[in-house]
Image (cartoon, rainbow over all chains, first blue to last red; front, side, top):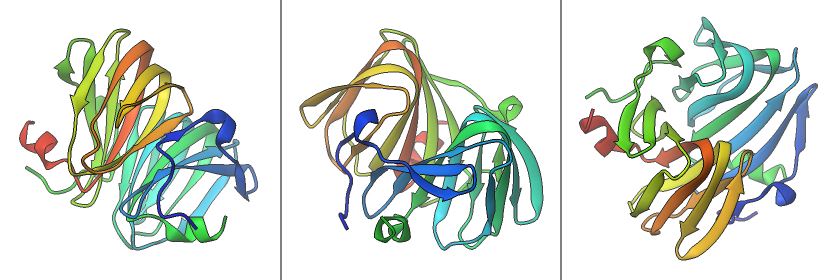
Length: 115
Length: 115
């Protein structure tokens, strides 16, 4: 397990990991303080409700998603985003194929040990 | 100055700030630990060489950019990304209109006080 990524994350070096039906991800830049993750969803793909101690900031790079954060629902489209405070229960359903850019602080060490 | 963003960042509530010629940004999700910023560049727009104590992870959402980080140059296209360690001198030139998603840890408090 490396404690930080390379400086550049290039298309031909990035690996996809399947994390659910219609959901796969690429680990992008990270160090101990933060981690950026690209998550691609097919329509109907689900990010099941979960929680973690990390702060999370997410950008909707493409597609349409229905989010639920602490019981509050919102439909988001490309260009929009959301914030998940530590321990907030959150999840999403993909309404149109798309990509979420998740940023966590501190690093999701569980994502690295799973590699 | 608020210490954290709203849960949802919606298109009709986001404000653009011009930060240079052909460069503007929107502050997206943040708290004390992290901040996500959308930066839109027109071709020829420049992110001048600079440094900061924050860790930075960036995703190229669209366009083509030439990066320089600690003297190492790389051309990046949509879907790729980069990591900037604290105090690393870095900058970019936009080669084709595009958007960078910058994530910082901790928060860029200087971006908030400038609002």
